[in-house]
Image (cartoon, rainbow, N blue to C red; front, side, top):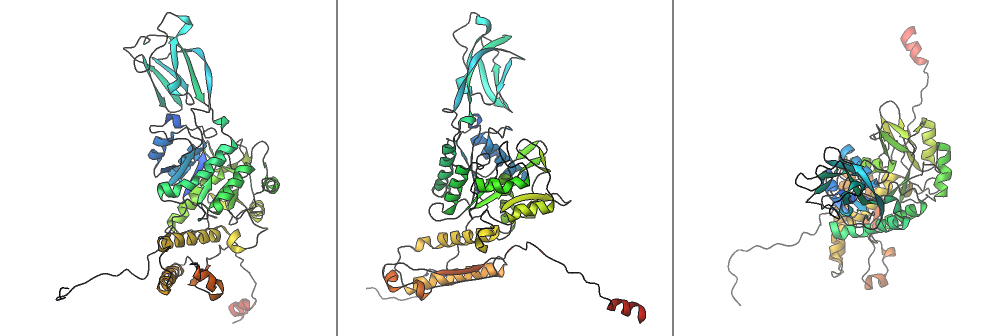
Length: 476
């Protein structure tokens, strides 16, 4: 063996780990999109990660017809109104399967163009001469005409070098997308696909949405079940809309019955009523709540310790599904809050989200379950700890390993306390929770104590007339 002669240096792994802080305010949205109009169409039922408006439109298309294409509502709200990203979207409309044939009809040509609805599938176009005229069996795309989507239409433009350029009318047949064929089972399957987000994007979303579908009790139940443990590990919140359509809640007095009928009582659910209006746009409240939560979290460095309540929505009124205006007094809005329902109020400074409680309130009186920010903080802390220490699994379970985990936890928790995100927190290994048989089996339990600050839901000023000031002012 050679003699060691000289000066050397080597490095040792740091005994305290830097936490892999979990993301927060990331929505996973299930719905329908005009994907047949997209530049790079995403497959049906496959989650798509979008970090910008252009990226979302390129993969899913866009239409102002939000009733048929529900994901477009969320795209507009999240990117245009709240300026937040990322957004994970899952389109369950498979236009190749969910479509209807439109019978051939003679259509007028204007300026060498025919205008068809956005739902028309360009790949199914069959263009012939009108009135049974003598023509080839069918005009050819790319030779006689080209078809492209523009705004809310499919444009069939006749090519100057083509055989039908001067035609005054043409006989056109096509198939159109049929979003009304989407079933509850397909939406539920879309919700289940949130499981693929961690493996595909390295992200576990913490907000689940299905605007336009979540008022269905089956969809709401699947969303709550999935929010309990995404990937069997991570907690999330399901943002649910109470139906305010023809058979839904028309007034605040109808909401509790509708909430109970749909069994919206889970601590994983945040329930909203009614819808929001901005100009001519109608939004499901869950859509804007997701944007607001993401905005508030981002403003707090990604920490979800603050409630979205009393923060501004991007709306100018409350409405039912048919656009009828809803008027709420503060007392009425507070009744909804007392039923575990989030709504909105306007006290002269714009419309604001109003409500700090999850759907389990008032039946569940555990503060970590019924307060939105506390419940989300518990999920976020748990996700961060899982992500940080996952790579320690299967290493030899020694006292040094345990101390490394405890020290890292306590340093990170102390930082959260110092930042005001927690009132207090600590990590301990309790003997009562770690019997010898568990330790021999390689299983340890570390107890995390944490207290997020509760939202200040009320403040009272007690005013009293003090006669002594009269003496001091006038008798002296």
